[in-house]
Image (cartoon, rainbow over all chains, first blue to last red; front, side, top):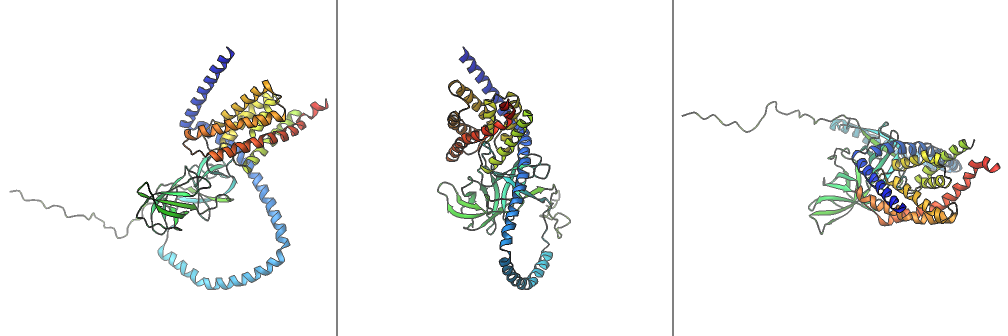
Length: 298
Length: 157
């Protein structure tokens, strides 16, 4: 009798759990609550710990710096002299670059604003099953879901979940990551797909006749409106015709070392929409084929 | 006085647990706290700490809400079942329990992966579960030793 009761109770609890799970999958209410509590608390704990780690590391490094400072000073003096000569030689090139930039008038994209962030941790806890990192910016401080994350070397990923001051970032190596890319040299389009943390990325839907080679740099195409156009994302590792599909089998590697990230840059959307520039020589009136002449009535 | 010591101990435990989880990806340190609460039959603290542990694990994770709840329920059930046969405060029982917990940890990852449409890596999951099984008894041993500090007055009496 008691066993029967336990079975009924277990069944009711299972049904309640499944009900809660499906309701949450649809509404994401519990996900939001847990992110706001759990991720925020973890961020609040990890931020001072990271600051403390930085201070200790700095202190340790300074101690070692002092030990080797005389030898390094001599070396640096020689290096400074060498660089001064180089700077003198490059001044003319810089001036030329300035002139050319003005001449071409390359516009800055006002749709994105760069914000620095500190990486607090990698995957955190047993539920962090996706390739992800935790950063110290949340939706209050510029890190809303889907915000692109980059470093000076290239693309890292995008924000998956955010609490007020902490966020979880989905790395581009995760199998759930899909990014529209274009090759820098051949302008070949493809979809960069993650295959897992230790595996090479895949570039899907690349035409068989595409001019894509090993070593080519892939940059974001900006077609998905999630990432700004032109951020370097990966380098092509291998290109081979596929045995099963009409596309090429392309493998690539990320440009950023995703295992040793310390600081990243968030590209916060500003909400400014860049309108297509008006053509100066656009005709005032519609110019098309000549209108059919009126036929005279007999 | 013991109440304050207890609060300090649990706060330090949560901070340490988060730091250790940041160092060892995939590890569940908070489950050790749940075991201690259940062994001590400290239901007053369990009432606020268990939801906090669940929200913490779910919040820092990338899965839909529910996995930690299920996992902690299974852990509680295993501990309660173990009470009928073993002395729950012995190291041997915790070793046995952590070995038994490999199965639900693995099963949960396997079950939840298709529900969220994410890939399931057999080797990585097994590695994670084994690491958890190795970690749990030693963490439990260290933490139970430090728990004596919170019961200082009781021991003196």
